[in-house]
Image (cartoon, rainbow, N blue to C red; front, side):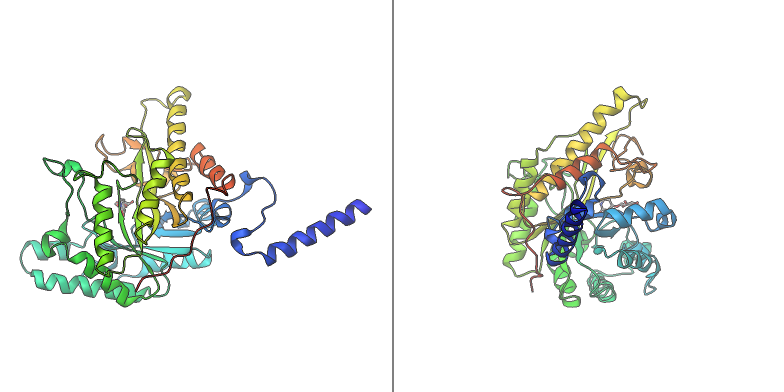
Length: 393
Ligand code: XIL
């Protein structure tokens, strides 16, 4: 009898404690294996996210995992220009609104993706510029009006906006490998469009965190003219010095087990160096591809699954190491809904895939357990809770 009373009393005390403590210090009971990524990440003040394929939300298992495991979401395609304004002046908000409703229903913060990018632009825009019917002066006005319309439409509902995406080259884009600006907007408007875009976005939303987002900026190289991470670092430093309202550097982190191998320290170093500029950081599109083996046996699959788990974990540890790394978003959470199934990364369409945390039949992979353990078993002195980020004016 006495024993039961004590148990009840302890339970009541725990309940009172759970209410009194801030969310970042929530007291979890039970085995961390049974806790969601979003609950474990909340203890660090970190948001864990996924890209959402709006068409897949009708699959109840997909929706259930998306809702329960993640505290931030990004529309995989529904907020891209070709979807939002398929014909000039005709806005199609429906897919984005379906996505926003899902996020709201599950208390998820939204990363808006993407305002300015050279891909997935509507044909009326690219063809109009190509045939001269849209002049360069007019193009600048079109970009201004588009950013203003979209940011205003979603105003107050977006946590982080990807304002400019993938604006700089990779070493293999030029004969001598030096890094520079690239793409449709740079070619037509010059590099000044980047500062303009951030200022226009800020004018339409005073609260959203404004992000520069790119791939292959997960770690610094030698700091020279071939180092893309260094180029982006210098660019962000210049923009900030000019008073451009850029709040976050997003590292997409599309990795493959066939390349490199970052240690968690290299990732942490990059996160901390960007933070030293006064910006927050985010991992925005994490996935880790594998070259598909000819046959999927234990012998061929085990090393791949382990290498993949290591990369997911190195990224998670690198993020946790910086108090300014505010979110870790995966680019799709299951192998059944991953862009890697059809994209050609150089080895042929779909030849490099199996890139996500869950199998196609929604079983968690070793990579899932690795980042779950990172979230559960890290803390002081090296891992401290996130520092809240406020938008710069
Ligand atoms: C990808 C989507 O996942 C695909 O469905 C689409 O066909 C192409 O774009 N960098 C980005 C994302 O910023 O928007 C891209 O998403 C992946 C690379």
